[in-house]
Amino acid sequence: MDNEFRYLFWTELHKWLTRLSQWVANKQAQAAQAYLPQVRQVWYEQALTSGLLQDITTLARELGEESMTLGKHGLLYTWQVGAVTIRVDEADNYLTVHTSGQLVCSTQPAIQLFIPGHWLHMIAPYMERAHLHEQAWQNMQQQWGLQH
Image 1 (cartoon, one colour):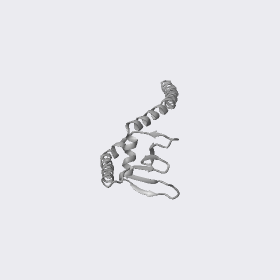
Image 2 (cartoon, rainbow, N blue to C red):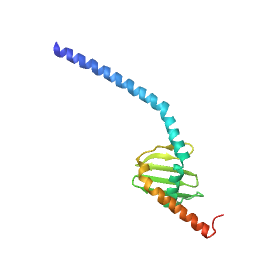
Image 3 (tube, one colour):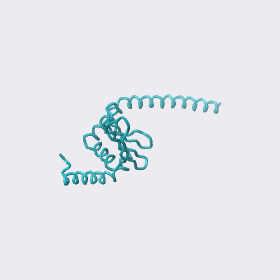
Image 4 (cartoon, rainbow, N blue to C red):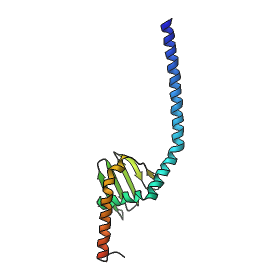
């Protein structure tokens, strides 16, 4: 009788814990649906207003490889360090960042995504170099009268 009681107790406890974990998972899913779009929008707006998206674009333009794609009227810049790949498409005027194959940043109007993470630490050391490169190019253009 004692073993039968234990079996029933643990069986009922397991059922109750399963229902409880399903309830918690459901509540987490509801919260994610409600709050993640808001957080996503806030992260994107912060990156946009702080100038971080422009800094990442400058990084790809100044240090990345430049290639002309057929049928477009702009350049495509690609820069990579480790698992981070940054692309700037001047023809369509957007920036995308992938890390380990996952999209973490896109300025495409239909997407507007910015997910901060370790990838920012990976590109941070190169930001200053990109700005110095851009500044040197602008100084040279001024010196030679190439700027309007």
